Each structure stands twice: as structure tokens, then as C-alpha cells.
View 1 (tube, helix red, strand yellow):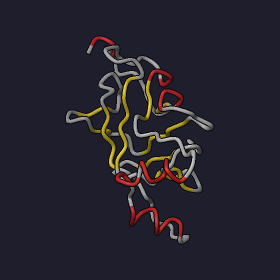
View 2 (cartoon, rainbow, N blue to C red; view 1 turned 60 degrees about the horizontal axis):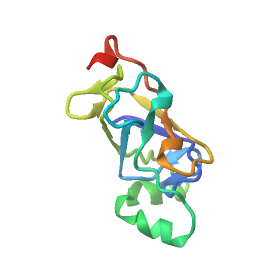
View 3 (cartoon, rainbow, N blue to C red; view 1 turned 60 degrees about the vertical axis):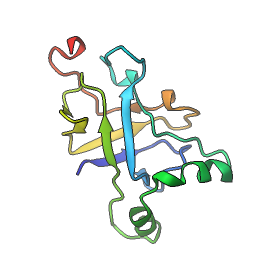
Length: 131
């Protein structure tokens, strides 16, 4: 399973030490219909702004409860989400919308919307923009 390091501290799924508490995340192209050529053209579509109790309730259906609780209890357990990636122009993209990277980094400290986030691990596949 791919380890996720996430610095998006304004997301409802963000846990201390840059851990993602979501059960699954979606990494996508920032512009629909256009292949990403740079990390800045990717985004974490799962981002849900932490703006009050209702925002946490709105994202409750996508929580990795076991991983999040173990992490909050101080365990060394990694609460890594399942990754669904549509960025086929990435070197790490696998058929079936998978990710072959051992670790991905999602950035976007102080993000207000998913377009403010990026998959910093993105690396353009040879011939990637023509896929």
C-alpha cells in the first residue's frame, strides 16, 4: 500500500504529523479534459475544508476509523488511505487508477478548495501528455 504524507492542514481528514485519516483519496487532473504535465496541475479531489463541525460531519463517510483512532492514540500505525488516481500522465500511474509510488506527498497547506492541493510526487511519464 502506498504511504500518504499530507500537509493539507485545513482538510477534515488531516491528522497530526502529516497523516491522512481518509479511507480513500482521489488524485485527479486540475483541469478536466487536460492531462497534467506538472505537479501543480494535479489535485486531491477528496479535500474537504475543515470549517466547523458541519464540515466534519459532511466528510464522515470517508474516514479510516481504525487508522485514525490508532494514530490519535499515539500508535505508530500508518493510517494510509486507498488511492484512486486518474492522472495517467504520471510515471507512477497504474492501470485501474492505481498508484505505484511507495510514498506520495499531498501538499496545500492552508488550502481552501481541492484546486489548492497538489500531488507533489507527480512525475511526468515519458510521452505522458499524449496519453
